[in-house]
Image 1: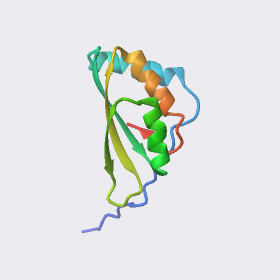
Image 2: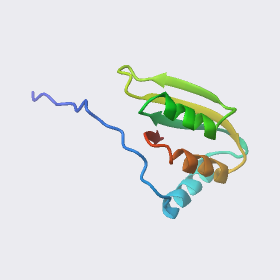
Image 3: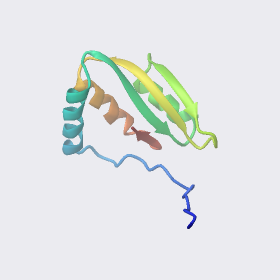
Image 4: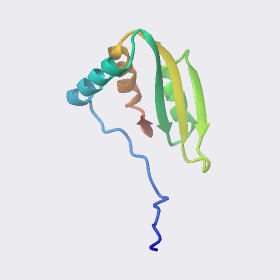
Length: 107
């Protein structure tokens, strides 16, 4: 049996710069179909590049609970933030702001 090689050097890339109307229109449609607003929305992020990036995210979501889970190797931190949102547009506004942080991946 042939042994499968696993690439352990996976790198996270930054979110592409700029805002594409199509991407956000598609996201809005999905959010309105799947989520119930107003309600609590779970934002999920992966951050590389240090604690200063987490602080940048805290400036966008200042009064919200951050659940941080560092990777085993310490190369990145997985973050979940639960926030009461009124509609899909509010969710998208947070994603647009977070997308300006270098070293963040939005899930």
